[in-house]
Amino acid sequence: MNLPKVITDLVEAQNNFDSLAYAECFSETAVVFDEGKTHTGKKEIQEWIKEANEKYQSVMAPVAYSETEEILKAEVSGNFPGSPIVLSYHLKLEDGLIQSLKITG
Image (cartoon, rainbow, N blue to C red; front, top):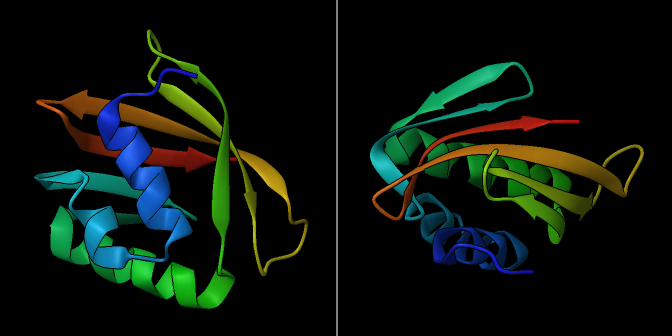
């Protein structure tokens, strides 16, 4: 699967539980929507993913990517009910960084 570098970096950061590297995949004004909450800017995104990593210890394995729709489907497994599950990562990329991310089931 041919993924944009920033998505490859995001997956690697997630699988290494590296919240700083994860946040670095986003623009300064990026927005993340997950579990009914909005996280804006790198600092909030880093805090959100750090908490999520501690709570769920989830890793992701990409299974499909639509370049035209900018949707990554990934099997996510971790410490949560229903693991593993395939989630959709709806991305908006700009200048090699993630401008927005919405995670859906």
